Length: 202
Image (cartoon, rainbow, N blue to C red; front, side, top):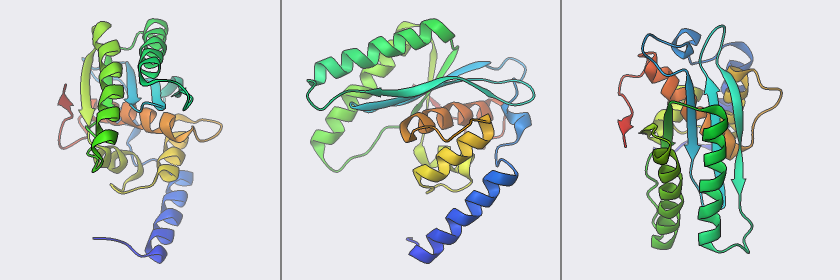
């Protein structure tokens, strides 16, 4: 079911008010539960713009340790982009030593070429994480949006604003980095037993 432009505008206004008042993610669910993971890596794979985000769960609220986008110029060959993804993620893993990774669920593209390219980027990211010995879980995009923004079809600006609010950031992260941080936060939320359906282990 679609929504009208007027409905979308009202939804954006509600999300903006929500971001100024209270997070839809209970802070108690983002604190480290018994036996849970304290440092979580989130990855939003893409050949030219892989987002990553590392958070530490704890009191009084989760903290962003690092986040960014692994950008690759259009002139780069695919193989060079894949190597860049692996290299940057290795550095992030070495520096922050997360114990678990949350990655966006498989992307279903109508264009076969797009699906193959996305699969290559995802595979490169997963290999770098698996090499470090981390457990890897995937979460469907709609579940991430529902957990963070309170709406499964929320647009990227709304997700970025909520991530900014939850992590007390000075400004909203870039969209790819915001999506990665949202993945990490959603996994922390599940670890706090707030999700009804647990992410699937990869």
